[in-house]
Length: 208
Image 1 (cartoon, rainbow, N blue to C red):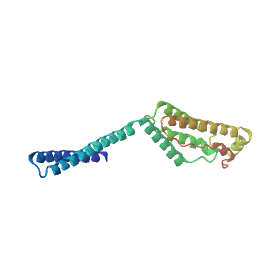
Image 2 (image 1 turned 60 degrees about the horizontal axis):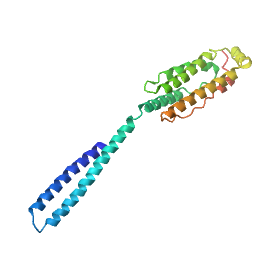
Image 3 (image 1 turned 180 degrees about the vertical axis):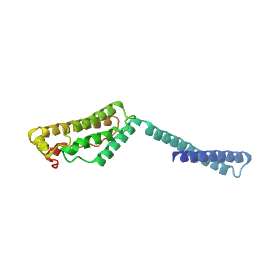
Image 4 (image 1 turned 120 degrees about the horizontal axis):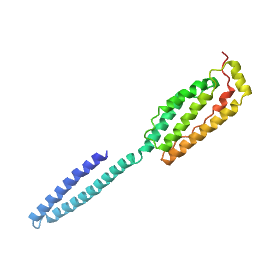
């Protein structure tokens, strides 16, 4: 868009210059009648020429600012892309419904998060995000693998599974808040997440 504006001002600039030059030649070749008219035309041409010059400079500056804005912080663009992918994967996977499902869901979810390209992101953001992914992997390793009904009931009744889930939930929340703060330092607003996995312990898996 700015390129066409610049081209238009260049055409008007050349036309105005020719207009002024032609008016000057006619004024020099005439005496008396018509001299004032040619002077007026030359003055009008000068105003047009000045307007074209100002417009041309404005278009060039505007174009330069647009390019500079687009390329001033490529790391912010990389962060935004990573956060958007995270949101897509989160929407795609949805929440795990119970303890048994979590043992397979969390590693699969973490595996998808690991596919997000962080190479263009600043190191502090990439490191914080990978800690968040590793936490999901830790949750997957902690969750019981396909427990039977009696095993599940034993876990629910005699272990501190509720406390463990609450701890993981808090750690997930803290790690995501760290991601938010780091992204904000780089000029990216990351939407908050609410982790509610502590409610999963209330849902027992179906008996085998």
